[in-house]
Length: 183
Image (cartoon, rainbow, N blue to C red; front, side, top):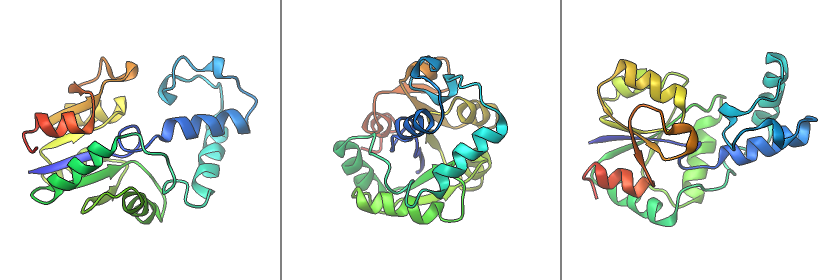
């Protein structure tokens, strides 16, 4: 089975670090944010300010490699078990020239073995081209795009902002892999 797992919001805690940087670099308040979901934050910033903020993130050395782990050690152990018999892809919306290197470094530093990193802005196309049969993602936009274009097993973490999203909610990566019947 070919299995997809998103990085940010599933494996890594991008949101907390990015929100901290937004609050630190701009005179906004945490009250501008309805939840710890960046999609629900209203910082009232221009596209140019957003690009500058994201460029600052991308220019931070090893930003993507040093994100804190959001999953558990049990999840990592189960990913490693599954990847011995199935193809597991870490599909990320992370842009930039060294995204693969930094994501591979994150995997290595956190003990994840044999996961192929695929950076893309167009997850549905990658999922189709790699014949991925199941995907775990937390992005409402990506979940909608995948659900509208592909007939695959689609899952999302149970977060307040994913409750109305396409796919089935799971409590963890281990829950996801269990539902797929691969552990």
